[in-house]
Amino acid sequence: MLEIKIDKKMIMDLLNKFIKYTSSDFIRKIFNASTKISFKENSIEIKVFLLKYYIKIHKIPFTLSGVYEFEHNLPIYLINKKKLPQNILIDKNKIYIYIKENFFTKSAYIDTFVFDNDKLIIKLKL
Image 1 (cartoon, rainbow, N blue to C red):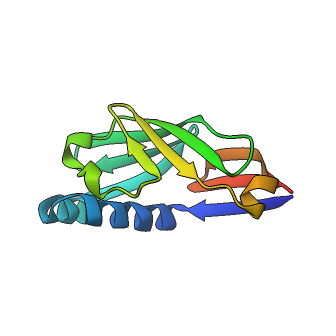
Image 2: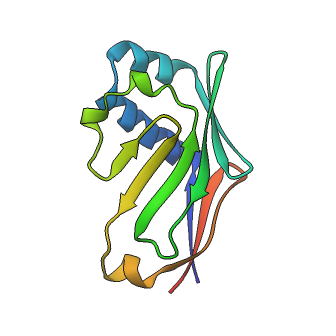
């Protein structure tokens, strides 16, 4: 069994890159200055000033490749959807992330996918 752990610093770095390419300078500065992230009950909680957002696991594929579906309450009107990578789709309350199939992602099966103790933990069966 292979275990992958992603901590909140890495999640914050990913969100910063996402914000950098899909929103305005003003939004980026607010996000960088005031954002706090925590992991609770299979969701990521994002606090920006007095606002609280979440991204929650909805569906995950059986193998690493496939479509990951998340629920959210993010202000998507602030995101330039045209600048998103082709494998990410965001709509009113869902985020879809597509992971291409290759030798590793096709043969690695997801045993556990949870947010716990400020980490995303993915346990794989090979």
